[in-house]
Image (cartoon, rainbow, N blue to C red):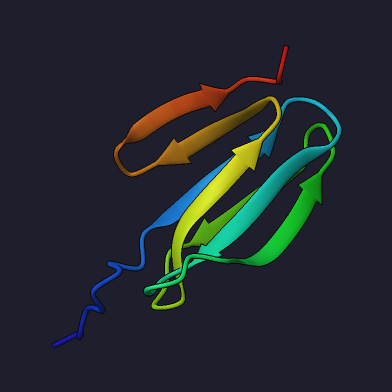
Length: 78
């Protein structure tokens, strides 16, 4: 039987619709902090996972985000 962690280990797929999309991982715990950052160019795809260390993922820029819960799009700052 596979043991599931509290985070659920859900994956998300991020596809940049423009150059310079920022993907930022935030830590889990009493102090939320940035722990990882990536910059994607148009057309690039990143597959990210929630883990025991990653509780949130922030996406800044114009991107398509696909999760097991559905799809959505982030928008560039106006």
